[in-house]
Amino acid sequence: MSTAPAAVAPPRHRIVAPVVLALFGVVGMSALWALIALILDRQCAWMAAVAAIDIVLLLRLGRAAPGLPRAIVALTATFATVAFSNWVIAASQVGGPMGFGTLDALQRLGTDHAQTLFGLANQPAEWAWYAIAAIIALWAGR
Image (cartoon, rainbow, N blue to C red; front, side, top):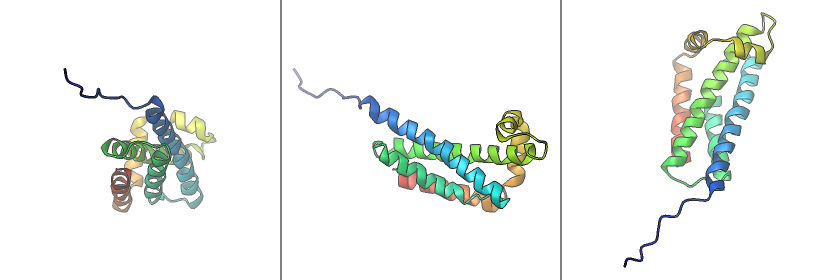
């Protein structure tokens, strides 16, 4: 008879809390990023690095187990923040002059139009900030 210990599953709150905090981080940082970008009338891609740091801190506060899974969650949440922020910025800039509120503009902006605006708004400097944010999310999230 072997007395090897059985694999113990992590407690449920150890999985749910970090994911919920990462979602809150995505929504909160996207709102802040869009607000700053609309006030300054610029893309503000440097906010991607701030978002990566914020999400990593939220995951650590949520006591997510260190390692590759936490780094992947941080990277995924950072990419989601970049995508959602760019969507909000594009929708607000297009829908505002037409008299739409932000929520109405978000619903009316199609994926093809958003992809075109994303490509036009993001130049090599913005892509560099997104790469820096990805590196921060992977390195600090481990």
